[in-house]
Structure formats: C-alpha cells, structure tokens
Image (cartoon, rainbow, N blue to C red; front, side, top):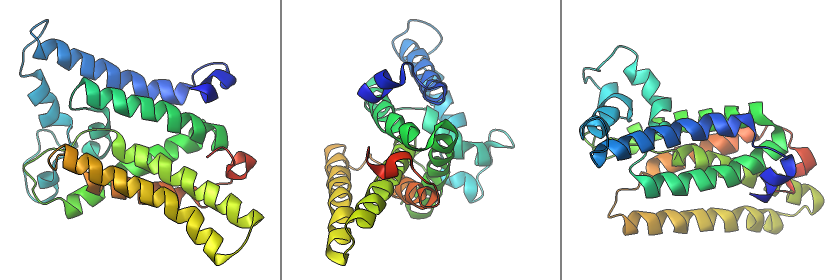
Length: 219
C-alpha cells in the first residue's frame, strides 16, 4: 500500500483489474444471499466465464469464443469474498511493485501472459476437466515471478557468484512452494497449483527481457 501512496493515486491498470473482480463478486454475493437476481447467477457465471479444460478437448462451448476467452475471463471470477479479498490485497501489493519497476503497460503484459499460461498449464496438468477453475492467483504468481527475476538479476550483477545466485533464487522459490503446499492442504486440494506454476513461469520468462527501473531493488 505504501508504494501506491507514494505514487499519489492508484494506477489505472490496477483499477481496471480490481474493479471488475469486485463488482462481479459483489453481484454474485447478493444473488447468493437473495438480495437480488437469482441464486443460480454464480453457477451461470462459472459456466460462461470459468476455465473449463474440457472445452479444449471436445466439449461444446456456450458461445463460439468461450474456449479462447476463458484464458482471461477466469481471472475475474472468484470463489467467494475471502478468495477475492486475498487476491485483491495481493494484486495491490505485487502490482504496485511491478508498476513501480516497469510501468503500467508492461505490468499488463506480464499479468495477461501469466493468466494465459496459467490456464494452459492447468489444462495440461489438471486431473479432471469437470471442475472449473477461477481466480486471479495465476496472474499474481506471474507478478511474483517477475519480481523475483528482477531482484535476482540485480543481486547477481552486484555480487556475482554461483552460490550467491542460487541462494538468491532458491529462498523465494522455497517460500512460494511451501505456500502452495499449505494452501493445497488447507483447502483439501481445491487450490489450482497448476495455474500458479504456469503463471509463475510466464511472469519470470516475460520479465527477463524487460529492464526494471532501479535494477530490481524494490522487489
């Protein structure tokens, strides 16, 4: 949050990502609790916007572009208020850091690339196509991957050496791995670790050719 306060205002790129996520989940929450609409709104939102691996292997889509649009639309849907809150707080934190490094356009490139590859890896590795996948965490792991790459490159340039380089990369990877294990166990396997993996790899790769402002010191 301090990063954003120093910037004077919320970056437009963050607003354009956060606002749809919040509005959609609030609309679905109201329908879930009978305040408006119908309880089936959430099921319909998932049916049309979630990531369904089966759509890539012969399922009939609800509309022609669904198999392609779902690579982005799933990131704007969430599984409840807690899921939304955790992801949006993380987006503000990591997104602010990435924008401070490379600006809003490159931030959006990383975010979109991580969302797309996160969905692709989920489609390849997920055990069942009958469970939809929703949430922005694949893209968020992409932002984390980008920050780790920039920080590691900056550290290696200042203090070269194989062991130092290995340690610089290993400890954040270890933290993310443990975090995924804890989330997977805590949710009885409901966490799409495949999406996290794909998003992280995409963010790391996309970040490599990008020159970060300040050499990665804010990661």
